[in-house]
Length: 219
Image (cartoon, rainbow, N blue to C red; front, top):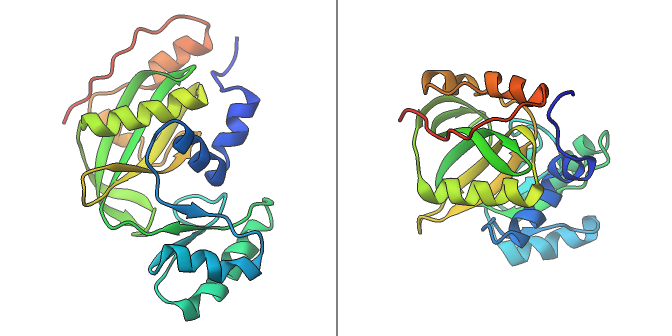
């Protein structure tokens, strides 16, 4: 036996924000409109389709490190070049994404072949940095719409192990997929306060033992 991990192809997709956005859309999970310029020459025309403000979003990066908000045309190309430079080390390419104002939500869990075994979800109250950063203050919430959308993403990926997704709730109440992190996430400590033990069942999976799903957590 060994560490419970997804198949290599699933991990390849999970490590790419652009690939995950495409996967979410094929799984009928709503995501912000996202365009991937082929080169700098296409950046302005792509931006005109989305309007301002918009996000320049790297294919990799953590805690918002490769994400910038652009409010006007004059800032666009320099910001795109900044993110493209950051992406050079990992071979990624920046995307332009619709900026959605709304409430940010986070859901982390333990999964086996896309099936949820444990989970904990929270609404972000304060994050650092504010755009896509780590939660420094949050409140656990069980939102059926959020859980349904998150489960679709993990199922489509056939994900195994500990993983985490970010959503934003738009003004119409829809949960829109932002990204998936195929790893232990920075705010996993919230689960302890919500009465969720991820590590005992993870250990059981690593030993090749079965785990009975228990999706409850304190709110």
